[in-house]
Image 1 (tube, rainbow, N blue to C red):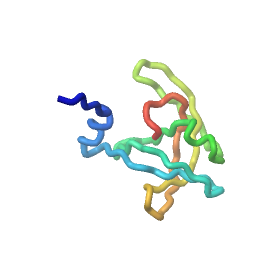
Image 2: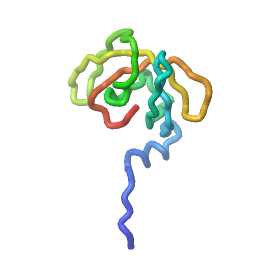
Image 3: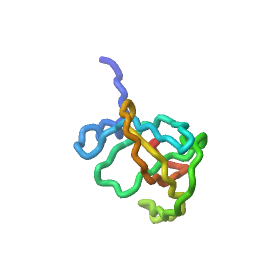
Length: 107
């Protein structure tokens, strides 16, 4: 017997047709980009991006968003627009992201 460990959250997400992990390239207006491991949810209304991943990017804040946690806590975060594409694809699409400090996944 061997002790096999796996990421339970990733396993559940990959097994449901609505959730998939994809590598996303997020790019600013200067052409600087970062690769982000993203949990793609076809039913989401907003994309959340971990703040430490985009510190090297230049972006304009287009608004603020109030996020309410499951525990009832509320936090106000910046809404930004960056261009993104699935890794190894050519088409860049402008997307709005909420930039947050404490999230479980990159995006």
